[in-house]
Image (cartoon, rainbow, N blue to C red; front, side):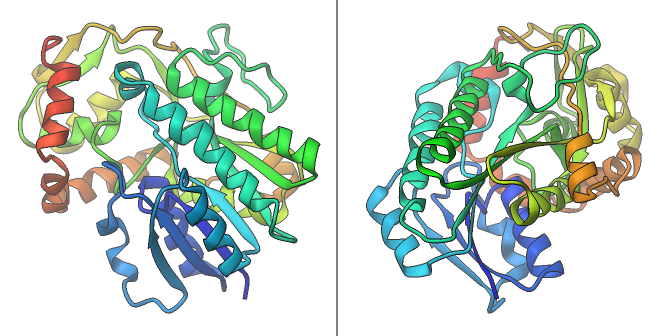
Length: 337
């Protein structure tokens, strides 16, 4: 039975990946997570007692802990989800993004070099390509053009992963995905924020004209794609994961309001964030052709299920909306609203 070390597995995408593997595959997982604001063990409450799962609390930036854990486990795979991920927060305070996303990734890569046969998979983002303003879709060999501190930190981490493959021969793969949605997403991102606010009849802050275009993929489809790349991707390669479901942000907000039977008068157009990319779009021919991945969850069904999950799990949402969250929300949207 193979051992997978997952970093950042108490977050949104990481927890979906862990639950997918434990439900569908015969592997064991160790989850290293620092439990910063978006890390939540409640995301994994339904696997408590699973003998193939172990949790370790700690930071990927702690080189002594990371070295010790890898020597102990001798894992077959390391999948790095651990990251600061929210663009708005990176604009307010970039330092944490550099520390975790770049330096933390380098700590993991350095420790991975000592483990024979280890494959390192970096979970990245389509935001490293920048805005696709001219109708194009970026393939894996497109140039980097990050426009936010978050995207720049992820691009830097990608380059470090590629450098460790080329310089040291480390077996690496990189995945870059479109916008994710689904249960357990922290309510600072568009879809859970709009659902949470609408459920309480609070204003829904929509940046600019709301006509920014994003492609949406369910976190379960993303998790399955990461697993396929982890197992079968070619060493040193990058794989985009997307399904081409492009939506204006404003249309997504209206769809949420319709599902909750809430009025459009809740929408508040607010000052756009700096350097807001207008459109993200990537190809996914490579993962489909080489690994046979295709999405299984259509957006309308997935969004309906996601809205229902947040509506039915209000205690989970309220625990997250603590003093720290409310302070961030006020800083980000207080003056805008």
